[in-house]
Length: 165
Length: 165
Image 1 (cartoon, helix red, strand yellow):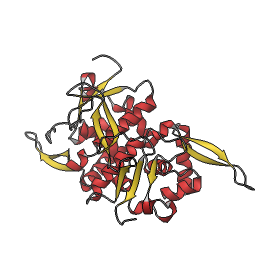
Image 2 (cartoon, chains in turn green, orange):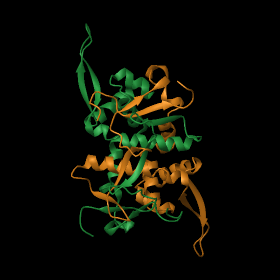
Image 3 (cartoon, chains in turn purple, yellow):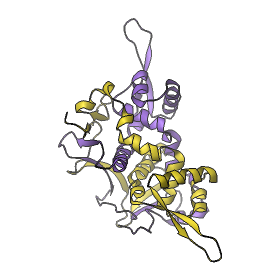
């Protein structure tokens, strides 16, 4: 456990001199936030993860105006997180459903960690549980390395892949 | 692995009827987004995780205007994610540093999963690696249950804690 004075994330190599670069150029967080850096994008993707596909369902679940939802869905489709698929009810014109792509489904760890973070803000363990359908145990977004070690705060190191440093 | 047609998150019990409730009332994601639902909040918290504490450093690293940064930092302090701590350089007036609280540090899994998601958008494995300082293995935000099982998409179940259902 890092002390309260140590950084939560350690920058290494050429990233260590924080004044020599700006995150906007390369940071994956900036890249992610270009697509999901608004509350409306996140809540629409949450609804999609709950299985909503039709515009009216997405709008109602997300609690957005139709106008904001339409704009945001267009951006999510353009960004490759959703696709539009045609469907047709008998006697109706062709309409479109919004379906998560593999790229959109890759957002699940973000949503789950937002749920856990939100629960920590709610106190008393929060209002919902997320459990594993298989065994009933709580689902936790965990920070581990590929070798299986838990990562205490302060022991995750960010290093650039562009050049050796 | 759920098929492309199955929901990524399964709603159970009284949550299963998606039309009978609105997320705004209870959803931990909404709670989280009230504090960190803007790009500017996330990038300020990223800078804080990298060890920035002084206003000028936070502003420069986050790439925000001073006005937006000041507004957002005030909200983050009010929301309990940061505290203001006085410091004083020789011959200067007292100034304040912004220090992450335990609640703010709990955002790390969100930031790490945003980094992974951003890397997936960047292609070619992204521009940075996050590695465990102890063993050098890659850090991955993983979705596991407390029993240690990996959670394939579609097998995480959201259930309400407020009442039995």
